[in-house]
Image (tube, rainbow, N blue to C red; front, side):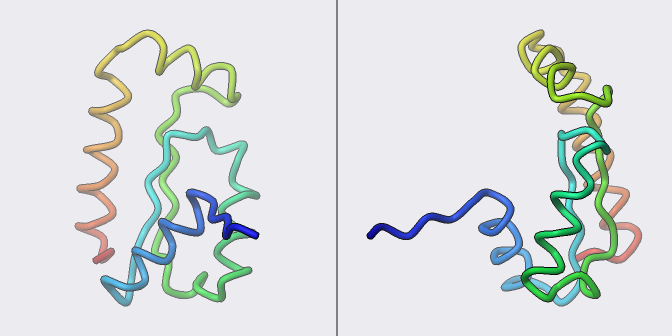
Length: 92
């Protein structure tokens, strides 16, 4: 069979390979927190994760789709701000 790796698993592997403390910045809404919490626990890296920053403007996946489809730079700017904030707070 073919190996299958989800985006969260790949991102966690990359983050832990390049620093001892990392953060997750995601466009998903905070209603998806369970997903990140589960993945961080599963891979035993929760203590190394300094933050999970949710920059989605809504509380639903439908709202995220609408934000992305609108082509508005607001979401991109929010990701950049969140990346700077987590780095300033100690994420590598």
